[in-house]
Image (tube, rainbow, N blue to C red; front, side, top):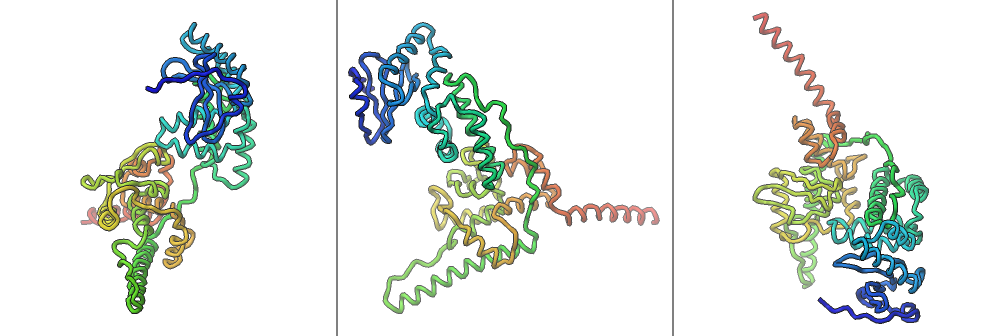
Length: 411
């Protein structure tokens, strides 16, 4: 373990600190335990350390003076010596010296990066959605701040479920500040998520549409291979180096669509999928909690078509890293829908198609719920009404059954 080098910090020294490629600390000899942490961004923050891996951020250099940091550090260290830990009141006082941005970058950000699999995504989302709060003191964050952000995002057409996730992230961050005694209470305690009914729009492919979609995907693959062959003939005639023939799928669209139809996975879940998530021998796919929308791991059995897709990908693309190294494929997806003459259909509706096909096949709704990763059965109940023709057949079966009984009685 490297030895800590302490020096008596001065006002000129802390005002003139220069950033380096990686974070570093200047340790004060006058108050052992006090350090100035300097980030590559140039931001520097006073900290007080005691024991093993125990520390508190005191305040931002420039906002808090060196003498103010020493005073706060002495108080905290005295409380640690007397009580074994800082007192709540002292920590609450420290929270007043922290901006929300300091709290996120110095405390909460490193914490969730170290403890949450999706910590990077959470930190990026907080920075993107709540950047306007970063200059505010942590202790001054209020319900009014959230109401202003919520109103603006709803007015901009952001879906309520997305705004609710914003609220969850902000509340979780402030809750952690309370846990660390940097705030006396969560200012968003009692703030409720936006109430909304389960989405009424449940669009799924009819048998005819699904057949058309598959035909359009096949035609697109044939066209890609024909174009490559034609291009190589042109290159050969001119003595140019030939391009490799299209082997397997021409790009990611067809395999990602087929897997969506056979697993019900969301677009984001499919794009995050890695080969480590695929158990080929046992024919099981795992949706990891880190990228699942529900935040919970689920396992999806793979049928023969899904397995054929994966074998094709493995054979021609290898089985390392992500299955789909793809950004946006909206243009290609729209082109296939146009070819298939399918209107008013989103990629997410492939998930509805998966669920409706299961319901029409007689699969229990709770099993459908587990496969889709719904936390509540209410979300799955909407699929009970997706197949009017199937229900009509079920009702007709009762009439047929009665007719058979009457015929039996007559005999």
